[in-house]
Length: 193
Image 1 (cartoon, one colour):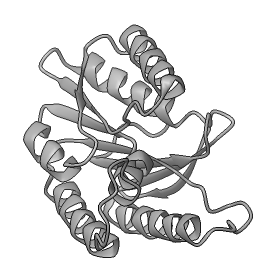
Image 2 (spheres, helix red, strand yellow):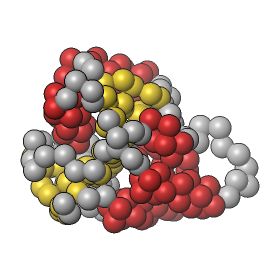
Image 3 (tube, helix red, strand yellow):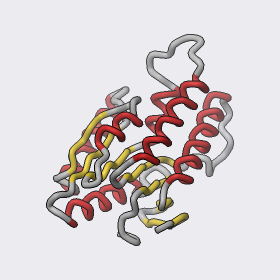
Image 4 (cartoon, one colour):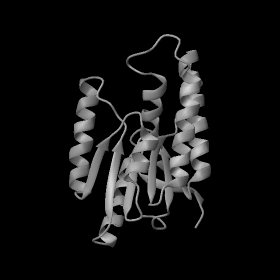
């Protein structure tokens, strides 16, 4: 683990870059540091199809082996409320992941016609940022960095990439540490003691 645990850390990277593994290592170190420490993972993914169900099951079994003492809470939408509910000075909260949470907000399976998605994004993001700032215990947030490739062709996908980029910037401003994962290796982008 690089540089120990900070009060808040945002871990960004591409798919299979080692983001979740780093969050698990931080949680394991937190739990090992004291018998009074607790760790809670807030999972934002939803099982939309068979592949996603298999992916979630694989993550759950892998996590149970790597961090056996970490509890899991599934919360696809009310993330700020879940952070506020579970955060405590003796409890590390891991959010995995911000990208799926934003997907759930902006691209819901049950799409409501004429739903003001920009307003939903703004309101929920503001609540999330407040929860990050008000978290009494350590907080690790995992998200994807997807803006490094080509510009997407569809307007909806471009809007999502823009929204995720804004979210990542806002969260990064509020976190003490920001780590970019590539090939399983952490690159520290920001580290404020």
